[in-house]
Length: 422
Image 1 (spheres, rainbow, N blue to C red):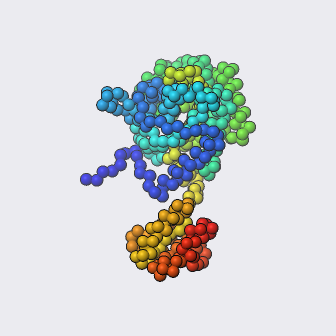
Image 2: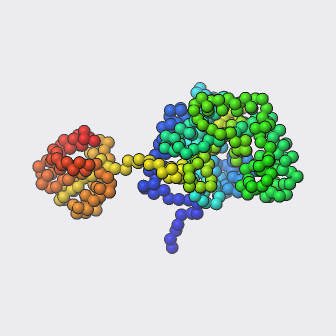
C-alpha cells in the first residue's frame, strides 16, 4: 500500500527549496536593516485565541480552521495566521515593558487552513509576516508597507500594484456599519447564508464575500472612506504623504477590506499584475489592528503588520520569469583513482569543508569518466584528481573547469592554493 501526501500539502524538494531559502534569507536581511527581530511561536494554540482575535464571523474561524481536542479535553487549533500568536506572546511575556519601543517582530513559518487547494494556495502554507507594536504614528504604517515592497523588489518583482484604504477608527466604523446594514438589509435574502448571518454581527464582512461579489448591491455599497471622521481622515492623508515621500507608488481603493476582524485605520494589499499570474492576484495583505492587544488582556497598544505567502511569492517570480541566480555550484570535486587515494580523499574532503569550501567526492566507486560527469552535474568550479601514484609523490592534479587549465599542486599546499584561486 502506497501512502501519498495529504491533499492541499506539498513536498518541497531539493532544487526547489533553494528558492524558499533565498526568499527567507532576503526577508531576514531586510528585517535586520529595519530592526525587526524574529519571534517563533507554537504551531498550535488554544482555539479561543483565534475565536477572540480573528473573529467568529470570519471564514477562517467558521470554515477553515484545523481544530482538535487533546487528551486533556482542551480545544486546540493549528495556527491559521501569525498575528494572533505574536500578539498573545507579546502580552504573555510583557513585551510592552521593553525599553526598546515600538516592539518590532517578524516570523516565518507554516500556517494551516482548510480551503479548496488551487494554484499557489495550499492547506499548509508558509507565511512571512511582521508586526510593529506600540506606535500609533502613521509613519510606521508607511514603514511596514515599504518593507514589504522592498522585499518584493529586491527579489526582482516589478509588476506590482499596491492598494491602500482606511477602515477608520471605532467611531468611523460604527457610522459605516449602520450605513451597510441599511444598504443590504432590504435585499439580504438574495445573498448567501453566510452574508445573512453577517448582516447583524459584522456587515463589513459582506463586502469580502467571494460567493456574492458580483451582486449589484456590492458595487453600490457605502464606502468606509466616506464615513471617516476628521482624525481618521487626517491619519490616512498622512500615510499617503509618507508613501509619496518614499516614492512608493500606490492606489486608493475605497472597497478594500481585510478578512480579519481586528483591522482598523490602514488596510493594504500588494498584488501581482503580471500576465498569466492567475485570477487571485493578492500577494500580501496587512493593516493596523489597534485594540487587539487589549482583547488579549494586555494594555492599550496600537499595532500594525502584514503577512505574505512564500508559495505565492514564488509563483509571482515564475510569472515574471525572474532568474533567482541561485548558486548551486561546488568549489571543488575530488576524483580518486586507487584504494589509497580513495581513502585519503575522506580526510582531504573534510579539510576543504573545514576551510569554508563547498566540496564533494564520489561515494559510488564510479569509473573516472563517470566521476567527471558527476562533477559537471554539480557545476564544480575545480576538479582535483588524486591517484595512488600522486598520493605517494605528495601531489594532486587540479583542473579549472571554466578555462580547462590544469596544474600539479603540492598536497600540503592544496587547500590554500584552492582558496586563493576561488
